[in-house]
Amino acid sequence: MTDLIRKTAAELADLMASKQASSVEITQAHLDRITAVDGDVRAFLHVDTEGALAQAKAVDDKRAAGEQLAPLAGVPLALKDVLTQEGVPTTAGSKILEGWKPPYDATVVKRLKAAGIVILGKTNMDEFAMGSSTENSAYGTTHNPWDLTRIPGGSGGGSSAAISAYEAPLAIGTDTGGSIRQPGAFTGTVGVKPTYGGTSRYGLIALASSLDTPGPCARTTLDAALLHEAIAGYDPMDSTSINQPVPAVVEAARNGDVAGLRIGVVKELGGDGYQPGVEARFHEAVELLTKLGAEVVEVSCPHFQYALPAYYLILPSEASSNLAKFDAMRYGLRVGDDGENSAEKVTALSREAGFGAEVKRRIILGTHALSSGYYDAYYGQAQKVRTLIARDFANAYEQVDVLVSPATPTTAFAIGDRIDDPIAMYKNDLCTIPSNLAGNAAASFPCGLADEDGLPVGFHVMAPVLRDDLLYKVGGALESALAEQWGGVLMTKAPELEVTR
Amino acid sequence: MPSITREEVAHLARLARIELSDDELDHLAPQLDQIITLVGQVSQVAADDIPPTSHALPLTNVMRADEIVPCLTPEQALSGAPAVEEQRFRVPRILEED
Image (cartoon, rainbow over all chains, first blue to last red; front, side):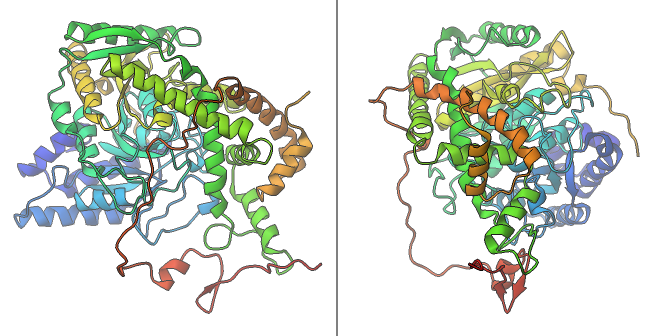
């Protein structure tokens, strides 16, 4: 039943509930798809065939025994390689962790397992989630299934590519400055950054602890909401976890309705530097929401223009501290331990050999920003800008319920195009970064294809802290209206991948 | 005049315990200079009366009951170590010759 790979997670769950398909059949269909296309897409760093089939069989056995199962039990999923999974290689896209097998599960992974969700394997990513294209992975670039010469976005390019190549119906990403939403936009899929603290960071290999947020990737709004509900919620293992109920995201996705909703178009996120095809699809989506009964106004967030520089001070500062643990002593790569070199020298040699160019660049930038004499001018000022951005959001949410913008200034660019121009690369994240700095909920939903290149465009929605349900309300409404025009979700317009094996 | 020199980058790399080759320094120093010019914009924005926000959430110290809970076994904790001896992490020598 090869069309199993074309089904949404919700459809697969229904098929299993009505005994028309087993989890083993569904899992095997996706494993076969990975074998067939991943040589070209390269979404996966590690495929856990045996483990996935064993998890699937366990779910089938429980179902056969009449046990009550969670909504997504038996549905396969691709896991970003930045989350620890006990006994399964976890590298965060870095050579410094090559071959490392964590001795414990991240909380998100524990919850996936408890929900009976089948983990197919670990997906490619920019090293330690530093990047916007997945070109910074130590294990090679992932290719965008819409056009294999293009990047899939980053840092979660592998997760988004896996679902857009029909290798998995669901995936987990992590979003520090847009690493779920930007690849979602580039691959025509749904990517959600939950409220910071709404999903646990325990077992997530930290990049910037005050920003990192695990979240769902899927091909439909409902699938993303079902996965969101499965992984979200308070975790005593994470001191930044919010002890509040998970917003009613599934209900919001099912009843996507924007009548009476006040939507603010962010004035500062558009215009110069934005690809015309991206802006055209964005404005059409806004018009569509107006027709569906939303009240749309323009809103100004004047400090958003400083989000990018503030972010590129805060992130490297936190990263330089978080990555200090890779010292070649307790785990990871060790280089130069020849009996002559001191521990300090071995650490420096190991970090030289184990880290890639972008990681070195950011660690050194962070070291600079935190160093004596520069701390107040850089890091301290960046934290003040964070206050101003949070105030912009607070002012905006007094006028409107949600804010919207394009998810990215351009569509997916060609592999190699920006790799030597860090500033051009960083500008990819202009629209997504403010929500990370303020901890807001935000998501990207597919809103069409750009005329210039026929590539997907993402519609970005931002909502206040713990109002993740509003994202799904807007996404659900937009998706239903657009599906009527397109005859299905945007992914159905993706070109067929050649089956190479 | 660059905002950061090649020598300063080499010094920062030493502080960050990253051995860099000359080629890497040649490549990295001008890029860092560009990035620092970009991020330096933040110094023009916020007035003295703006409080800094270090975190998106108001953080409080989190305490739990002082109860014994399961943790990693010594074997698990040592499982990823590059070198192990007598159930300990084996590390290169800490003290320099001089």
